[in-house]
Length: 449
Image 1 (cartoon, rainbow, N blue to C red):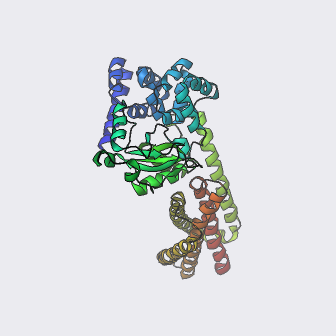
Image 2 (cartoon, helix red, strand yellow):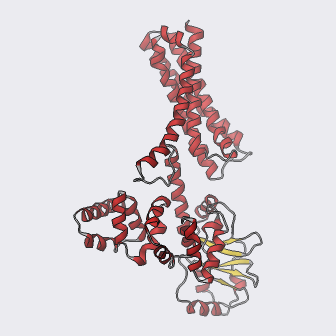
Image 3 (cartoon, rainbow, N blue to C red):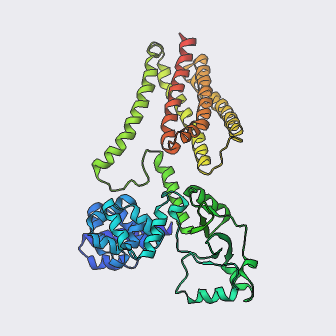
């Protein structure tokens, strides 16, 4: 909360300085901040103000700030930059950050930035670019310290002292053979506490879990969370060490996943810019609104089939939103639970029946409980016991259907390569609305006419 307050205060101070033409004050503020904080201020500012802020960022800091920005905001700023400025911004970036940066550039700039790198860095970046962005290989850092198993602790320490600095988040040295095949991991803590004459192969950890280069970034994040890693080796299919992943990269994945979960419920992408152009934002939201309109029309068609009973019993029109709403909420609870479990790799053929059974009985209990409550309210409100029984029955039916689709819908969507977090809520809401109206009005037609 304190950090959030500071960011808001910094944003207000910066905005006021720019509005009053106090650019030196704004520049001094920016140059005391971390690149991630500068990126936050840029993203939180209107488009015209962003350009002014960007002009105040020190050239030596531009690359670090660009890496922290969302793709849309970064692209907007890069379009305003000269080619030489983009190349200069890329020069001091770490290999993993540089690979992310290059992937977000227009095609005409990618080759120019790559050709500006020295041979060693270009080879490392191309190695990362060879893997999809959302895999371990696509997020790894190729800046790794390795050693051979037949050297002594003293020799390794002497080698480390000759280095200007260790790569960030270095908590282990990776042990490889002459062909760069991974053999084990030597924690820095072990290296510093062992006797100088000890041989590395006798003190290294041989059975530590490694990360395949083609593993998804979500699975990588789960491994880091479960095992409390600071860094981990990344291997190609032949078992050769190709890089490492560090906890700061994993934090980015976790943050992106959290943002995706929140924004996708409204049909928004995590890269949506808070101050994106009105027309562009309107187009994106129009697709989602159009989809919801189609589902609403489907529900309206179902209601239209029961005009006769609705015209005779006004109470039905008053009560029917309750059935649909309760089913929608219950289904969303199950859908969210299952979607999260899929993302965490907790769903398999072995446990899907047990999960469905659990959700079925939860819906039975809740459905019965709230059906009794709503049924009593309806019966007393309209002095009609039969109406109370009808809405109670419809509610139980809808909650059971909501549980069934809440479990199986995200699994089906995932197999169809459709994001269940994005599409699941729309489909489920349609189902619970249609089933809710159909069951309530259908039962009313049977027993009230």
